[in-house]
Length: 213
Image (cartoon, rainbow, N blue to C red):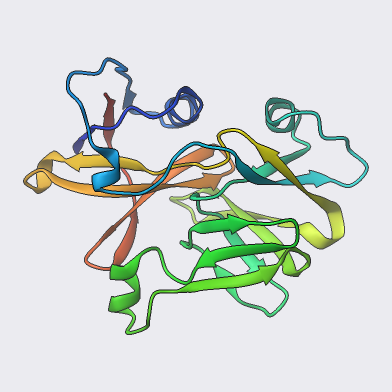
C-alpha cells in the first residue's frame, strides 16, 4: 500500500473530518518543524461566506447540527463539489473560489495544469445561486454509485458569514514520487471529505495511508 506523509497540520475541524472518513489513516498531530504553507498555496481560515444547503422547511442552527441531522450540507470555498447548473453543465473537480449573497464562482479546471492539458485557459466561472440545480455525492467509488440532490426542488440556499469559511487544501509530500509535493483539495462525498490531487494535468483520488503532522 502506498504511503504518503502529510506535512501540513490542518486546523482541527478539517483533520477530524478526514480521519473519521478515511479507513486507512494514521493520525499524528505533533509538529516537528516549521512549514511554509503559502509557498505552495495561498489560503487562510479567516472569515467569509459559507453556502448552507438545507432541506425546505428545516431550520439552520449551526454546521454541526446540519451535518449530524442530515438536514443538508455546507459548500465552502476552496473545496470541491460535484455540481450541475441549469445550463446543463456539470463540474466534478472544480474548486469553489468565492461565495456571495447571490453568486458562486468556481474554477473551470482543478488547476492550471489540468487546464493546460485540456488546451484551455485557466479561469473562473460565475453562476447565480439560483442556477445551482443538482449536487451529486459518491456513495461507492469502486462501483461508481452516486446519489443526486435536487437543489431547486428540495432545498433552500442560505449564505452565512462565518469564521473558518474556507476548506484550505492539504499540502502532501508523496514519498513514492521522490518527495514530490502536491496541493490536495477536499471533495465532499456521502461519507465525508476525500482528497483530490493533480498529476500531469489529470485529477486523482488520494489512496493509501496518510500520516498527519
